[in-house]
Image (cartoon, rainbow, N blue to C red; front, side, top):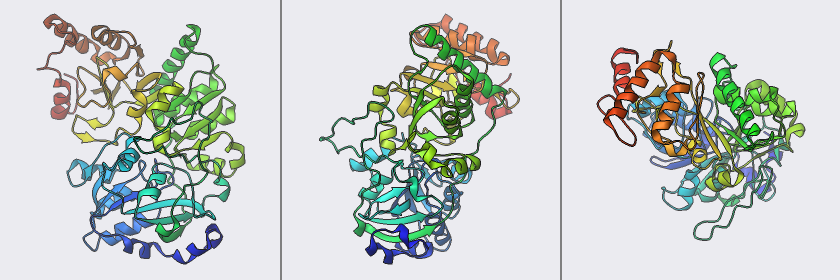
Length: 496
């Protein structure tokens, strides 16, 4: 074990195995864990907790930054160890348990979890499990590949278990900016006016007396699933880039654009990758996650600086970044997610937000989370934080899927995460609809003209025309509004 990673001498006698560490957990506890989109998460303690839960009654409420890697959520769910989970997940096993009603899930804006804890609107955290690169001389914690809600958990939890991950080099110190806003009613302005501003500490402050256990690990983060751009994602990226080029020609933007945010996934990755061959330069990012495309853009010279809450990359990119960290350390920063996602900063910096929809309707309402209105996929994540407050709020999805039997543009969405008031631009592989300054009837026609798959266009136009004939500011045929979803449920296809 690398005891030199514990620089506060009196903590060295807290080293123990993961199996011993989970003895601190009791039934019905609230647990906070580091981890944001598979990055910087608990690698062994929560896994050991799942093993313990197989043999005794042990259920916890688990809060994290976002999703966990190494199938940890699935292991906990399968073992019956989860009573409630928040604020985000991507695990198939856990998703099935949630949709079966066996695990309660709170789908939450990622900026809000820490706020609710500080405001005492959530139950207090009994135990926090936090991955670090090392413990500094003052007992403070140097995070690894994410910050997420770790600073809040460290401050508010009664007890803290540390996982020191020796797979992360100690020179990760310095890429984090740990700033916690004051509690209400004494909150001050967060003094960030550009993505590269650093305003806080390089490590997470903590009362060392709260640390009850230290566990060593050497496991890397679960790699991100990076899919190569396909015809559809490339088409979406091309539409967005052409839109940006036109905004520059109109004088609305410069070739530097404004700071970018992109949700995680293959569409976002394709859009960001498309900037490599564009005329845009000196780009910046103020987002949640740094993906492969972020570092590709840095390497190409197109991206000057990127701010986020985690680094979630493929195995190859992981080796590139952490094997050559000196190259990137002055170009990136990782922050707590209630800073990276705070609405005031998003509005102040003029973020261009690009996020993924499951479906959207003809008036611009977006469903990001539920299949046929009832079954959760992953969660809203940070898309809502950015959508309402962005300079430009862009949502993307393919026009149709499953051999073009499912339309992703519909008369009415089956679940609303982002209302039409928070959506500026909608993009599919078919085209782009700029909804700014349009009334509902204008929005609907623009979406039908530009975004709908040809196989569904005639039927959607018919629906809209008949709804307009009936009247209304936002015309609908309520008896038909969900008929496409019903058809899908009954026949497996939205086609007549």
